[in-house]
Amino acid sequence: MSDQAKAVSQAEFARILGVGRSYVTALKSAGRLVLDRDNKVLVEESKASIARSNGAPERAAVTEKVFSDARDKKEHYAAELSRLDYEERCGKLMKADEVLSVVSGAIVTLRTRLESFPDALAPQLASIGDEQMIRALLADNIEMLLAELSHQLSTLGKGSE
Image (cartoon, rainbow, N blue to C red):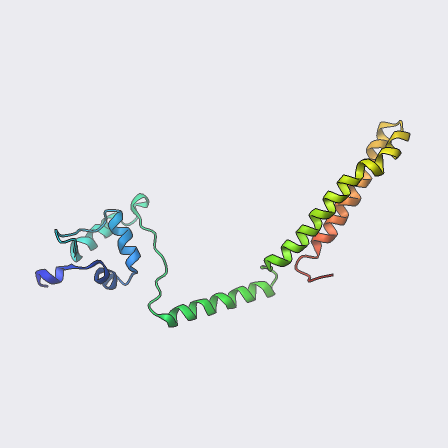
């Protein structure tokens, strides 16, 4: 190999390694590349430096998927859409707007019912002198509220009811 072939641009070094230019930039930032005085990458020396520092977590560069062309991107995103569709059909994934709608409804119910407790329960509690009966009345009302919330939240993933 000639002296010129030993020193290449960062883009060419990325092609040699089969990685994206951003990966080579990360290697350079991490001090894992050997550069000549013209800021060209010395191929063999840089490969050796990378090999020496592989496995060292504090020096590892973040890698990312590199798409060589539009076809690869299209295939990748088509596969992702298929995966998302599959997970939605299996019930592992739900649409955010549907979840938000059900959860918002449950929160409104919770707030409304909690706000009504003083007016609804005060007269009943005032007439009860027994602490156990007061506790039972409060527990019954709270249990009814929780059952209602549970029913509302159980509709998630089942469509609108």
